[in-house]
Image 1: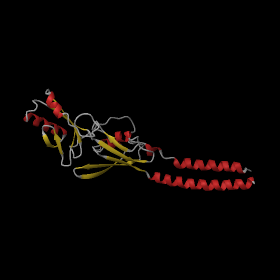
Image 2: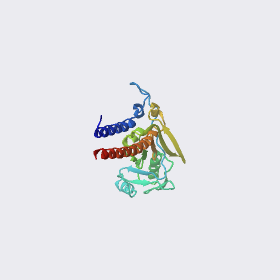
Image 3: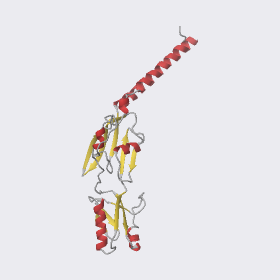
Image 4: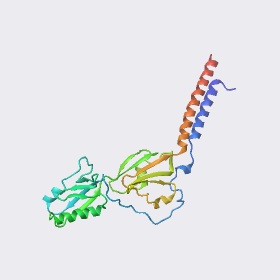
Length: 257
C-alpha cells in the first residue's frame, strides 16, 4: 500500500501530465502554404503597385543640376522632425506641398513620376535650371501589424515595397495561437476602408492583390478559439491544483500527526 508521500507524488505527476496534454496542438495548425506538397515552379501573377501621393505623406525630393547655388536653395528645405536625410516635404491637408522657388504644387493624387516631371518643367519654365533631374521618394511608407505576432507594432518601409509575409516576419512571426487561415488586412483607398481576409495556409496568397501591402495598411492576426479555451483551462487547472494541493497538505498533516 502506498504511503501518503507517494500518493502526493503521483497526484502532482498526473496534474502536470494533464496540463501538458491540454497544451498540445495539431501539426497542420502551424503550417503555412499547405498546398505546396513538392518542388514546383509557378508564374508570378502579382507585382507591387505604386499608390498615388496622398495627404499626410512625407516626400523626399532631390534635384540634380550643375548650378550649385540654385540647388542649395532647392535642396535646403526640410520638414522638421523628418527621420530621413535630405530635403523632405509634407503633403498638407489640402494636398499641397510648398516647393522652393516653384511655389505651391497640388501633389495629392499624383504619381511620383508625375510630380517629379511637374517640378522639372516648372524649374525650366521659370529659367532656374536648364536640364534638372528630379527624384521623388515616399519616406513615410509604413504598415502596422497587430494581434497574435511576437512583436506587434509599426514597421517603416524605406524601400516602399513589402509583402504580407515580410511584414509578419519583421513582427517576429505568428504565435502558436494565431489563426493562420484568417488574417485581416485593413486598407484605406479612394475614401473607402477595405477589409480583406487572407489565408496563409493556402498558396493562392501569392496571387492576391493584398500580397503586396500598401502604405498605411493594417495587418491584424486574430487568435484561434483555442487561445480562449487554453486560458480558460489554465484558470481551471490553477484552481484545481490549489484545491488538490490544499487537500493533500491537509491529509498529510493529519497522517503526520
